[in-house]
Image (tube, rainbow, N blue to C red; front, side):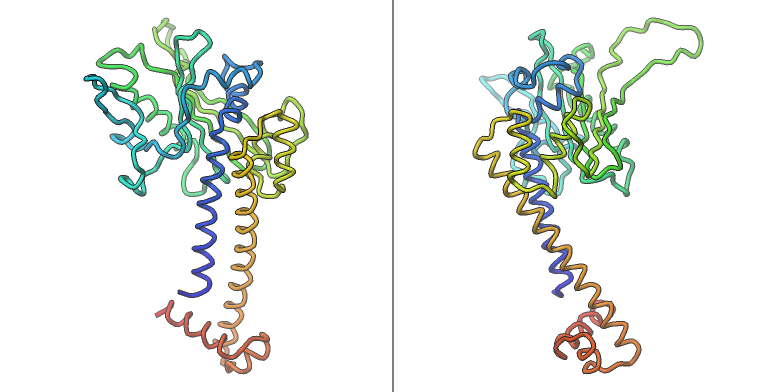
Length: 318
């Protein structure tokens, strides 16, 4: 395995570890409460500390599959058939796409519930249009309620769903709510039903952290939490002092590990870029007929290193 491939694997591995820690931090109830206060009508204006108690149980983090047929699981409990989210061993469905974070929230009326999904994206993807993926996710959150949250044709029991996407490295900070609307084309009829069942929220985070003002309160919190540029102390100062979020030991550890990983990713990427440039230079000289000794002299490298680069490049092109 050549050095370039090793570096690529190292960066990918560190990226995966970073993503896992980011999801764990986003999945903290204190952080989720801040998100709910800015995105769900019923909780707007509330103190995030008062919203924490409405989040039911522990959020499922990177465990529940998105794919049809895999989101739910059936278990027998006290002789009853119980359907719930499928959080079984991930190795059973390795390679399966999973919700980053998904959980139930009890409404203030004490009776109704909503289902909330939070997704973290490093940037806006190029392979597909992100809203299409978000629509697929909310559709799965609705359809997977069959036999879990409602049975037979009791469609009035469908729970409202929110898929909230936190997209980093965007041109500017933004917050948008995408939902169903009714347009009357010929006359109008009061059709019965809930247009608010499906909700997509897109949160765009600019690379530069905004000042702490009400408009960008959520952006500053999430930006600090997920930043690859801030130090551990800078992150903890913003999250703990500005937002009064309790700093449990595991929370501090995840923040610290994330910072170390982001530093490692930057260093590995810089090293990979330097080595890629060196390989390109060596192969350019080699293609022009220069000897390994001449290339080694110009590149200030050992002749054996030059021979190894040429050998690996020849193997890859064979």
